[in-house]
Image (cartoon, rainbow, N blue to C red):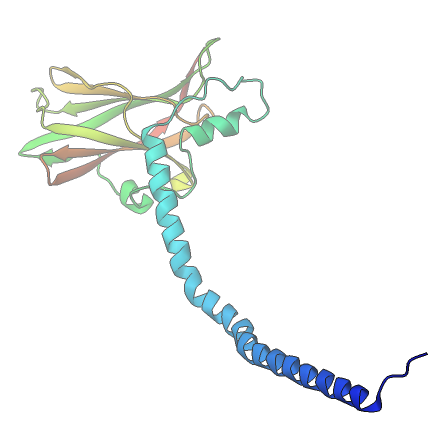
Length: 230
């Protein structure tokens, strides 16, 4: 049996010691570098989180408004499906505490406005159709009335509608589904694909008017009852 030379053994032990010291130094260096990051990262997260949340909220708001302008009735979901009501509400952009205009501003809108010396108001009919084969989603018929009986000018447009329930706890914000129909003294519009709120619920209806490029007005019709047809 061949014995290990004593000098060779000593050299081997010495080499192992040097290697161990090298790796221990590296470990200490990494610990010094990495440990403060673990301590700093929660603080950094506190500083970064608000801006991340704001950016995400702005993104969600943009997606929401785009979806509201292009919502569909989701007619491929059968009415007997357990999630039908939720799908319709999502598709109609019925989102709590979500509006492109602050709810308090909408609820403070007047029931009459004077534009270029002429007075205007709105009449609304909010309803759901329960006839077989109908989508059952809410519909809002709106009439902008010129109180002097003359024609509504073509440059006075209504571009957005809000139906507000429970003082703003639930809001349906949408655009109009059909082209406006002009008649002597008024113009009519229709918004379709709304949420499936219960008939006999009370809502406020608010619309936004534009005249030209820089004049904006809001009109409100208060305490409207959601009707049903069978």
